Length: 357
Image (cartoon, rainbow, N blue to C red; front, side, top):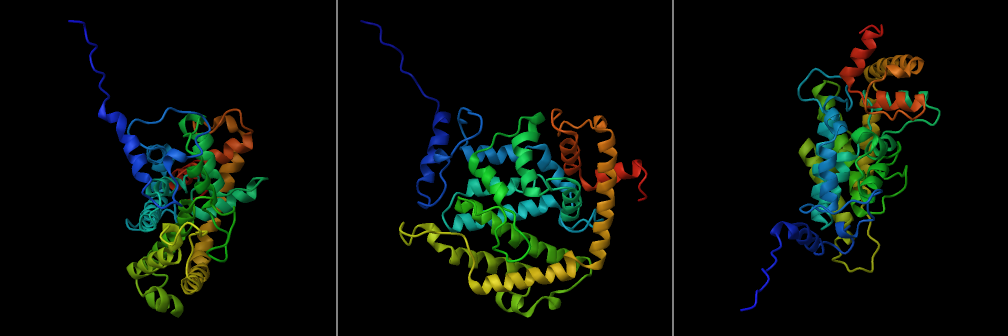
C-alpha cells in the first residue's frame, strides 16, 4: 500500500483573530474595522489572537507612561484624600463612557477603548497648570494631546515608540478641545466615529468627576450648579452621566447604520444638552478651574516647572531617564523629561534643587 502523507492540522489559535475580525463585519457599516486599518508606521505580522486595535490597547496598558498616570493631577495638585480623581482614574472613566457609547451605536469598542486609554499619556504633572507652564517655556508651545502622540510614537520602549495603528494615533491627537463650546474644534475632527466618541466622552468624564472633587473639597455643592444643568441633565453625578450618554447616543443614531447608509453620521449632542453642558462647563471654569485657590496652586506648579526647566537646561546631561531621545535638542529632551514626571516626583526634585515646599 502506498504511503499516505499525514494530514496537516492547523492550530485553533490561528483562527481566533480572524473570527473576531469576521465578527466586526456585523458592526455598523460606519464602524472602523481592524482588518481595514490604515496600518502602522512599521510593518508587523498580525497577532495570532488579538486584532490590531486590541493589540494597541494592550500596548498602552503595559506602557510606562500609563502607569505614571496614577500619580498625576487631574484638578487638585497632589491631593491627600484617597478619593480625589487622578489622571489614571480619569482615563479609566473616559474609557468606560466611550465604550458604552460605542457599543450602543454598534461601533468598534476595541478601537474606542485603545484611544481612550492613550489619550492623556503625555499629560504633564500638575494637570493643565503644568501644561500651561511648559507651553510658556517652549518656543513651539506645548499641548498634552500632541505630547501623548509623541509618547506613543517616539518615547516609549526606549525611543522606539509603541508602533500603534493610524486610527488610534489620530484619535489621541484629535481628542483635545479648546476652551469654549464643548463641540469646538482644536485639531480637526477625527475621521473615525470612534475618535469622535472619545472627544465627547472625555468631556463627560472630566466635568462630572471634577464636580464630585469640588464638592469633596468643600468648594461647592449640588445646589450651586446652574439651573439649566439640573433641569436638563439631572441633579446628581449618576443622573448627569446617564443623561449625557443617552443624549449622545440618540443624537448620533445615524452612526448605527439603521437609518441606511445614505447618511453622513457624526457623534454629537442635542441642542438642549449642548447648551446645558456649556453652561456647566462655564460654571466650572469660574468656580473651580479658575478659583482663587486653584490659581494659587497653579502658580505653585508654574514655579516648580520653571525651576526644573531652568536647572535641566543648564545641564541636560544630568537627565538619566530613558524617556528622552539622546539625539534631540536639549530643550526637547528637557520638555519630555519634565512632562513625564509625576506630581510627587516633580515636587521632590524641586525641593532637592532648593524650592521651598
